[in-house]
Image 1 (cartoon, one colour):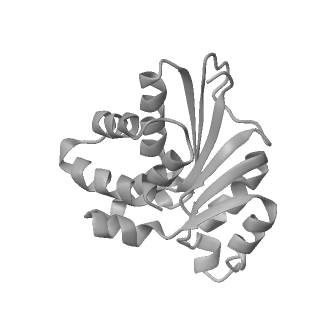
Image 2 (tube, one colour):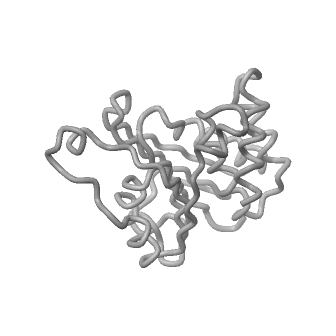
Length: 190
């Protein structure tokens, strides 16, 4: 890999964005690449936005992905995908879970959840939309939505599937490994 691979992972607190970034960091380590991770929490314990940047390459100087610099946006929720769109480079891809988690202003009726987010995304870039929750549930752990999305991301990258399996083994507690491997495979099969 001669140039850096830049990813922006977005979601809502509790969805596993940070775990996903650690799995990607493990992949970079296995490949002998330099990797930088940056985590930005916005009231993440209260369902607020969480953004993680992952950069890997031969030499990476900054952990932050600049606007227009992300090869991929991995979005765990639709509105977060739309919010992160300025970070995507021309020709980049968004992989988005079709789940909608209502932010507090929508819950209390002060604002409305935007309509047609997937249509807007598709009009701007290559958009791979999937409903990851049923796949994670079928794999044995509804919280493995992040691993379903990682499986779909893995299909779009040139790294061998065995690297991803090792990264999951290194990152997850053993009691969650089997369900997460199944969830990864479900995402990869899409």
